Image (cartoon, rainbow, N blue to C red):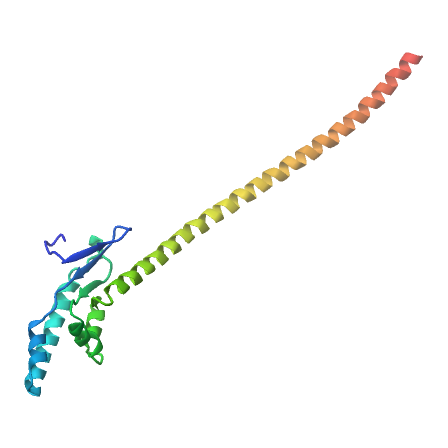
Length: 189
């Protein structure tokens, strides 16, 4: 990014936007929390783990830079399902790690749901593209309707002129026939 910071990975989308993906996750305090037998110590390591994850979420949130072409969210890739479980599934309440991440627009993903989440993002973007295409088609139809109305007006004018020309032709033919009859009568005299 312009700041010089580098994200672990970027998913480039067809519309030139990017989804930042980073795998910053704290493993040290998580391992200590899992290995600890004493409940008091386990709680201390859990508190440290929560603090570590929030710091990582804050770090990843810096990669959300729509003015540099990113989407308005980033993905926190957690490559271990048990760590992901601790962050998402086991966590409860409004002060949960997942709620904190969503507030910062950093979405934790695991190996099992990473692909599914990307597919969801792509379907959403396809929906936006379809909506954009539908709007373009609708605008073209409005212009086409205007062109059709102008053509219809011209067609009506042309029809009127043809009708008038046909009437004048018939009227002129009758006059010509009468004139021809008068000339024939004059010749007979």
